[in-house]
Length: 156
Image 1 (tube, rainbow, N blue to C red):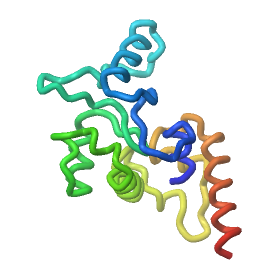
Image 2: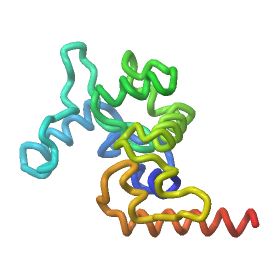
Image 3: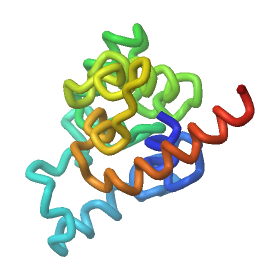
Image 4: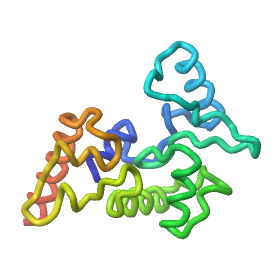
């Protein structure tokens, strides 16, 4: 979890907006520019564009929650309304709840934390599947191991 948050927040360990932009409008502009230049080849639907109600479903938080359906899912799981005001995911308490429940219950990709980390099981590479397939898995495995080493050293 800590390795994922470290990566997804550009090492800030604070809830951030996708692109690290200070506002939704700025993030949308950055994403639109990248989209027009063909730099987001993996994106089939520009999810950051404002919907008819004026909301944008760009990535926010510690794990970069994206797409309206994910905001809806996590609203049900957390018991918090993330749809009326998606920017609430930028609050640390909300971002933590999303990350913990989402990773524990497999909300993001169907993969749960316990599939890769339970008892003696430590599958650092495939643990990335909880959030984003195996994209940058070796790098995130290194982050996770480093955090775990620090925690293990201080606790025991």
